[in-house]
Length: 233
Length: 156
Figure 1 (cartoon, chains in turn purple, cyan):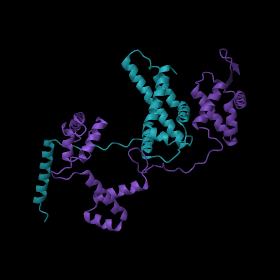
Figure 2: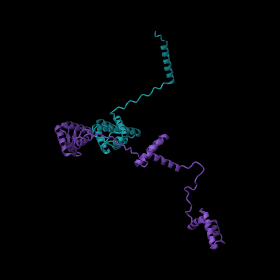
Figure 3: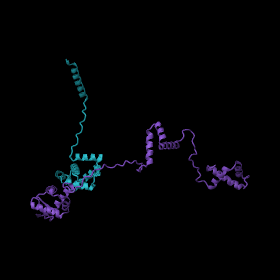
Figure 4: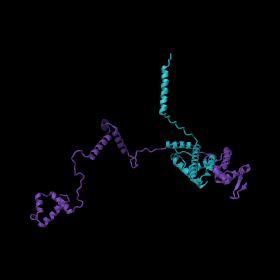
């Protein structure tokens, strides 16, 4: 045994049998990895081959000029042997049968949510309808109420979304009256105007015929013109 | 190990994890454990250590072109050593699979065996022979010659 003058470590002569045994004893007693080997890896039958492997590993990892190695070098070599599986644990875990990875094939919508039963059925109806002939569709409509309902709803949706292909078009459809900025008195006048006869309108608008006088006729004219300008009349 | 060598080793390990991500994701052990064990196994390979010692001397040479070549060679050796260690660890049960390999993972494992020279790549199929116009003409005239000879031959 010698001492490294720089680090102060004790160096064991690996060629000397007695020193090699002392080094192994120190390794198993003083180092954590040695104690781990002793408890989890040591098998008496393999002890000689383990020691040979350790010697080889030390020579590979720390090319030795004079066959001297420190305890830390032996510990590092043993650690690498245990990590690399060159020395196997005595109680090796049994191989478990491997399962194939589970692939999630649940149909999902564009937002990644799983489709519910109704949506899946609808999807099946749609895909089937794209490939089936009209005779097959009619046959299934009679035997499958769910499919008949799907066809009916599809037709309704198609009819409501598609305009009639002639020149007649309901221009008032979805047309909102532009009365958002109309004063309430003008709107009230327009509502009253629609219920009045032509004679009553003429009487109200005429300054000479209005029973409340020219001022009332003037006010009625203002309301009338404002209602016309706002498109209410 | 020099800083450059450490950097290249880390780069090779990163490449390994990226190139074989499907295979690594099928493993029971974490990336850190895989790295630790493959490093330990590769460090005990005497051939690899000799190669690395040989190439490590040229990693920081002055000439840029030669330096790049040396670094690329070093990185390839490291990658190959990691691949070989990984395959050996998988074979001796030190690294364990968590599930059956997917097709991609299986392909990646095979590629690792090729890279680490544990298995030979199948020889590529020979390219079809393309005859020049002259060669085709000669071949056709040769066929015609023999056909005529056979036709003229008196078998009786």
